[in-house]
Image (cartoon, rainbow, N blue to C red; front, side, top):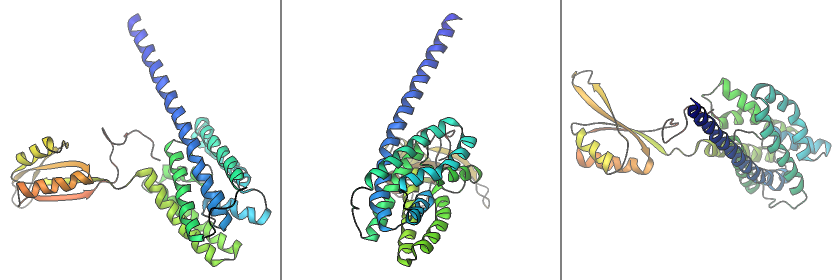
Length: 302
C-alpha cells in the first residue's frame, strides 16, 4: 500500500511538472505572438487609417476622435470584457489574457513611435492583417486571448461550436468596418478595412485549424485484400474494414476506410487504379479529425 501511495505521488509530481512545463511554453509563445500582432497594428494598419474590426479597430477609431494612444485605449476598453471573461472562464484564463493584453499594449505604444513601414494601403491591409492573424492565432492556441472580441467569440463558440472562429470574427468585424467608414468619411479606407478583415479572418482559420490536408477515403473493391496489403505495408496507412451490403443486390461487401494526408491520397488512388480498375473509390476532405495521431478528443475547441 505504501509503494502504491509513493507511485501515485510520483505520478502526480510528474504530471504537475509536465503541466508547468506546458504553461511555461505557452507563455513563451504568447510573448512571441504579441510582437507580430503589435507590428501589424502599429506599423501597418493604424498609420494608414485601417480599422480592421474588433476592439483593435474600435481603439483606432476612438484614437482619431480623442487622440489617446491606441494601445492604451485597447487596454481600457478591454476591462469590462475581461470581467465578463473572468466570470465565464475563471482566473487562470484571464491571467494569461491579461499577460497578452499588457504586452500588446506595451509593444504597440513603443512601435507607434517609429515610421510606418508602408503608406500603400493595399500592402498595409495585406501585411498588417496577416501579422495580426498570426499573433492572434498563436495566442488562441495557447488557451488565452488578446482580449476584446476574442473573449466574445470564445463565448459564442461555446454556444455555436459548429461556426468557425474566423467566421464569427468576420460577422462582428463587419459592424466595426461600417462604423469606420462613417468616422473616417473615406470610402476607400472602408474598402481596404473590409479587405483587411477578410484576410485576417481567413488567415486566422488557417493558423487555428491548419490547411485542409487530410483526406477521408472509402474503397469498395472485389480485390480488397490486395489493396489493404498495399495500403498497410507500402504506405503505412491505417485501414478500417467496414461491412456493408448492396441495397439492390443485397450482396455483402467489405468497405475499406482510411484517413491520410493529401500526398498519400494521390498514391492510394494510383494503387486502387493499378489493382482493380472496377473499384468504387470515394475521396473527400476531412475537416476535423480527433483521436490517436490527430487532435485530442477532449481538448477544448478553439
